Image (cartoon, rainbow, N blue to C red; front, side):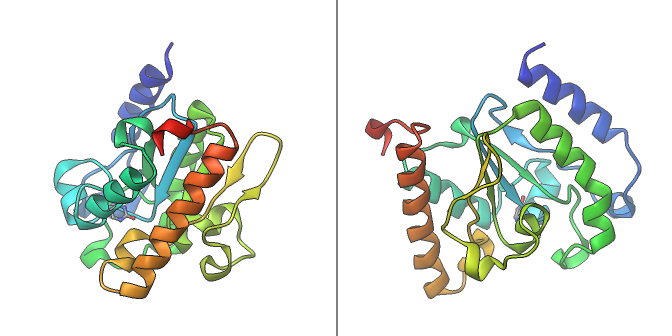
Length: 193
Ligand code: URA
């Protein structure tokens, strides 16, 4: 079975699952993109547009993410994008710890199929799962090799930067650092940057 088929089967199981209370008022938004990619981006939870379309990062933060990907020679089709929490919290509030816990097995299953070399947590909610002892302020823009195969490369959440010019330039420079890391690790070909 290809990774795409495995992910599709997992998505179908997820859509039939009723284990998170957020599902009462929101639509399921599973991960999306290239399951053969060595890079997975992980956000916090879907917003309104994502809830409407059932695809992660398709609203304003997603457009900015597309621009940032483009700045290092990547397109959406080159990466896989998902969220820690897979339903929109009411009024886009922060996800509760229990909601993160309930949805986490799905993220783990996605990662076990994709087996990415680089995981990019976008913001503190995704970072907290991989590197619970370090804050996003200290970790962003740096590579953390957690075992022989996987590096965590945390980046600020693109939504946080939409209305904050300083964060915006911070995010742009984090992406340059990510691009350089991917190139050095032989994951992104130099001609793409
Ligand atoms: N913010 C997120 O964290 N995820 C999305 O899918 C959209 C916005």
